[in-house]
Length: 258
Image 1 (cartoon, rainbow, N blue to C red):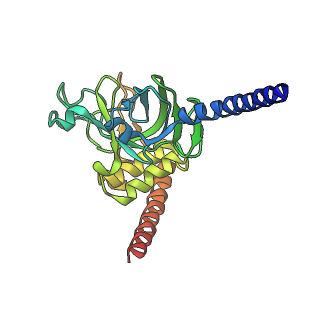
Image 2 (image 1 turned 180 degrees about the horizontal axis):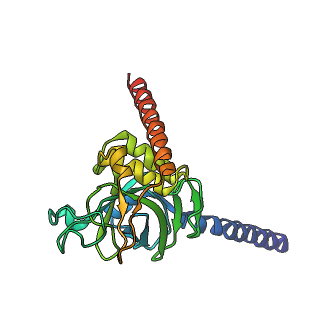
Image 3 (image 1 turned 120 degrees about the vertical axis):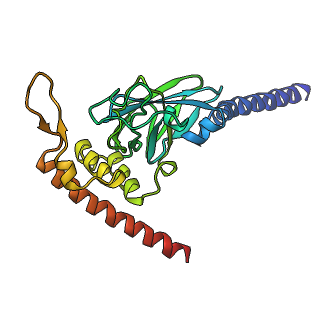
């Protein structure tokens, strides 16, 4: 009888230990599951640091570092602007289109616009689609994005000037610009075509003015058009499309709000 009781106690103890060990990995995995955050909200909360580094007018790098001790699942802004820090501080003025430094030492370069990649991999590991990516504790990821300039007449963006990543709506509330940036993120429009459309929408340049834009060559070489006729024709069509999308989105919003 005592042997049976001892065997029963041993069996119960074994089952309890097995159950505890089976639950432990699940509990551990739940404890380390990535927390989901919007990128700029995570930055505001001090969970991450975000650096926006423009390569030039056509592309930029968003450098994100996880400052916390836990993995994070982060979502890039669907559309964004890269704003010169000196411009935010009220310093600088208009520069020339020719490039960086055209407006002098204190001149602020152009604000840029773009969108997080929506339908393509970001080549950073942990890609989850829809602008989401995972970031382990105390690790850094670099996200490459396509951009356009939004302020014609100012200097070319440069990595030697400090920039800050912000929501696009904090720079412009034009719904056509938002739709254009979304098209860039989805890979629907080429960068040069998007640039012409962006200057038309954000800076008010006419198609005639855009056609007159030139690339200045040194050494007496003849100048060449900044945009080809085909690029301007495509940009004209893109503006028509994003205008219709903006109108449709506005109508949908109005209907849902009634």
